Image (cartoon, rainbow, N blue to C red; front, side, top):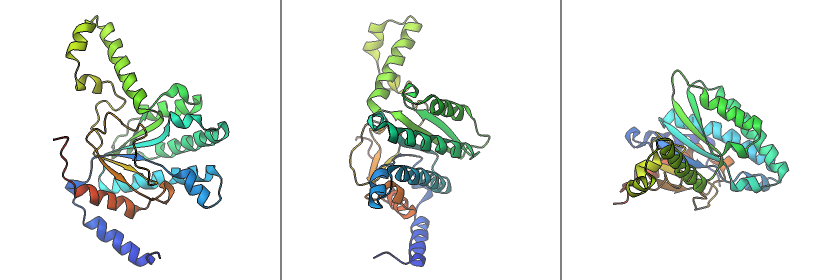
Amino acid sequence: MEMPGFLYGFYERKLQHSLDPERIPKHIGVMVDGNRRWARQFNAPTSQGHQAGADKIHEFLGWCQELGVKVVTLYMLSTDNMNRSGEELDLLMGIIANTLDRLDEDAEISVHAMGAPELLPDYLAERLNKLTARTPAHEKLHVNVAVGYGGRREIVDAVRELLHDAVARNADIGKLADGLSVDDISRFLYTRGQPDPDLVIRTSGEQRLSGFLMWQSAYSEFYFCEALWPAFRKVDFLRALRDYAGRQRRYGS
């Protein structure tokens, strides 16, 4: 039985007011999972689920801006997703392109692309490049858009770029190997220069990484929510933040 609207609103406000601003995660990674299953629940086409998921992204980013989150990484399309049917991929790429256009309309959001642009249609890769090149005058939120992204591929790309850099500097590869550190590889990740995620949220009840930020999430806190992404509510997000605030982060110690 659902809570009446006015009680739901009261509970949401009470929950939000209970959060300590100092305990809000600065960087949140989100695995936006469950669009297709949400559509099946309503006997709707898959494209409707993807569109509902895209609409939820903009709603979610508004919550993050309101609560003071500084960085959000969205797992929108993995390299594994590229194996879906051509028809579904075409529709999904179009929805992602429209989502990028809507992000471009927010002057307080900056966008960084993560993934393999060569796997994407030219028009989508071009929009990502254009959006990434834009620098807001007053940035309120930085959004990493993981499209055509794979965690293993990111690490391979980082090591490849590190080696190319060493060759360009005429560095001794043997000495590089002997002194190789975590920071050396981190300098070449897609998220270079950014803080690692404090909290990673996955919707739809699945409890696995699926290759998302494999390197960066080594010490992240994880929160798994049963709600499918299009049905993810602000109260679900606030509960995730409350749960995060109650944890004692140990960073492996």
